[in-house]
Length: 70
Image 1 (spheres, rainbow, N blue to C red):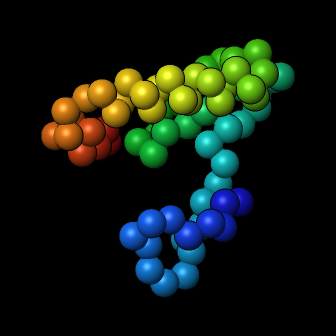
Image 2: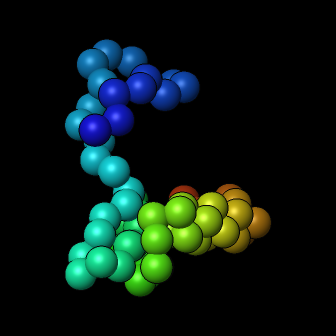
């Protein structure tokens, strides 16, 4: 569990779980919107996949980044 306080947060640290998980020997990452991406051969590859995903998201206009998938 991540217990680090992030910029702009006040009060007790909320519960956080890892974005990475392994099923059947394959690695995945999950987004805040509940999207699971994978499979990746290793956790390191899943970490690279998440970095690429976040890079693409950060290239989107602010309005698109604020939209939530439900």
